[in-house]
Amino acid sequence: DLLVVGSANADLVVGVERRPGAGETVLGSDLALHPGGKGANQAVAAARLGARTALLARVGDDAHGRLLLDSQREAGVDTVGVLVGGAPTGVALITVDPSGDNSIVVSPGANGRLVPEDIRAAVSLLHASSVVSAQLEIPLETVVEVARNLPDGTRFVLNPSPPQPLPDELLAACDPLIVNEHEARVIAGGDLGSSPEDWARALLALGPRSVVVTLGAEGALVASAEGSVRVPSVKVEAVDTTGAGDAFTAALAWKLGTGAELAEAAAYAARVGAAAVTKAGAQVSFPTAEEVASLRGA
Ligand code: ADP
Image 1 (tube, rainbow, N blue to C red):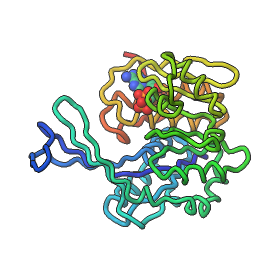
Image 2: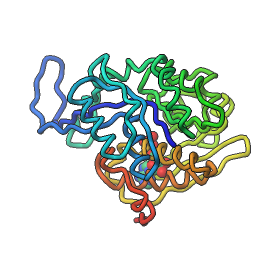
Image 3: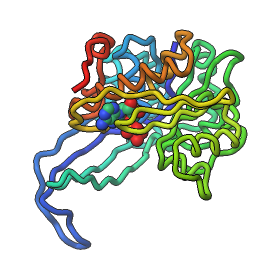
């Protein structure tokens, strides 16, 4: 079974002709409200593929929290690990301009109140999981606590987003660490070189057992002590890449839990990511296993 530990946010999206300056008011489009946050997205993506999935997260005792719980349950995610209360549900305030560029303010809210003690109290969930997947939209010390409490034989997958330098103890638990170019640069620091193979080498030197670098339409690179291999994506008509990285990570984590080798899991995840970019939105764009199987390149 897969356990996702991470964030749940309500995404509040308004279209604007242009963004207001200080002291200014502009009128926007009708509000769109979507369930989001990397943890919630990953859990929905995995469950939609057919994975037995649980989410460990924190939402507020409010309407946004209920929206998030409903979207998880509708996808088939086990929500016993979703804690309620302590602060308002996390929100992302998103304006989109006519060119499609986003400006985003995130209020972490309850995500910031998911504390190490919550992980210790949920150790039975960790023990019921063959794979645990985390991101960094919750406090770093909480993610470190997850790594400390992993049962023997449970695999840990980390997408360090938004990126920050990571403690050695956390890096050592990752198998794999999943990054895009920006995350690779923040985590490895310094002059990384220009090829994904260079980035993967620099990251492996920091201690994770394996590294996956996602490369958008180019697919991904999988690297470990045994060497590295490129995994292609499927050529598709990209409509909206929101959530593609979350869908990729969720699919990869789930496949690892079924016993797949890393390169094989990444190849499947690349197809899932490609399917997710063919539709607008995040959670609503995540494919079923049947949709992944029938995905044809453009
Ligand atoms: P992130 O959103 O974290 O930067 P990527 O953009 O690399 O992640 O996307 C994750 C995965 O989704 C990629 O590895 C790839 O498999 C798939 N993907 C993303 N964009 C495209 C695209 N335009 N065409 C095909 N596959 C894509």
